[in-house]
Length: 176
Image (cartoon, rainbow, N blue to C red; front, side, top):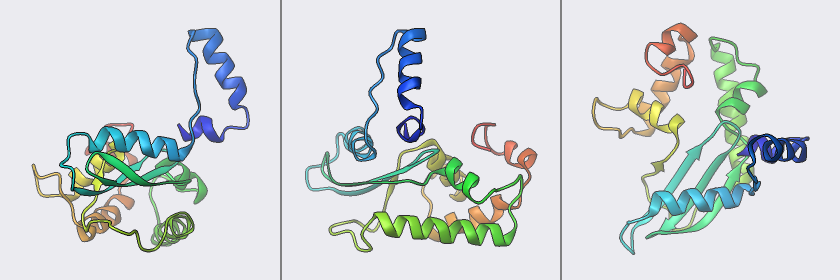
């Protein structure tokens, strides 16, 4: 979504998709993307349930605070898994310095886009993307799908030094 949203030639991409596929694309804002993701993920939650939702894509991360089924506060942060790798020129393996650089950059971008204190946010978060699912499955005890901040941090440290071949043994090629 953010790739088309941010593309210099987005009108050309939209026209080509219409011409070659017969589809009419609507490019939505990051905030609208966060709202739509929130509506899908929060569906069916009890009316008073408070949720903090993250969806990490390739180019952006959407964040929503929800009450019940309704996303209330929405943010779109211009940082995703692919964009971050490109910005720091990440190679097949990350050096300690590159990992530190990535984390600092991501913290700065998130701090610029999202308030430091989110009113009403719960202590736990829900992740809805394939990226989050993959890293949580790697970081959590088998079969749980729940990871702590500490286990996620350890997982990132462990994954950063693996080669692409080693990562493909644990994830599908797209996620590796």
